[in-house]
Length: 254
Image 1: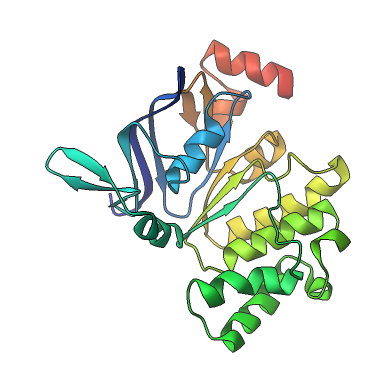
Image 2: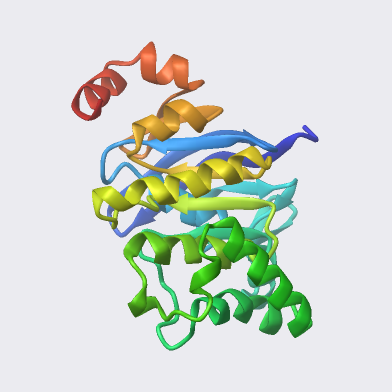
């Protein structure tokens, strides 16, 4: 099990009477790019947020690198961690949202250096050097002094990716990172994600970009109605799906 990065076991989550996650079991291995597919309301984004404890779970367990996330175990019971302790766990898990969530009053450079300096306690010189390298990595070295309002949606999302990477995570979560973009801007964000995958970063990506899933993913999980319907390689799930629900979904999006 030493190569397991994320382990979800019988994860349940409800919002009132809405049982969003109904027993999710999933294993993601180190260095794997895993895409979560499914219709709106299938629980994909909720599950992603549970991995870094932005959402609590009602039962089950989620482990990252063998460490229980968001809870401590005593006997056969789980007790939620203090927010400060959960936040420390979250430092090693980067997340990129549908909306860019950049600080509007900060430049791209300041957005990237803020958390390493004030959360991790990095020296300003170290954070600066890292930020410049990350801006180069996402193809925006010339936008260091630009404010979010001066950037396109695709550029803002690339800055958001750089900001997440600045915390030096070993797991990256992407929640439909291109869904808020105009179609002509999608490609530039996907290219950054492809290059990140080539570095060996473990990535879990909620997406409707079937081409990305087919080309980049090591595994694809199709979710519907709060359950994992089908899990396998892109070839198995996208080309030769076994379940009718998967085939019906793919017939609408491919």
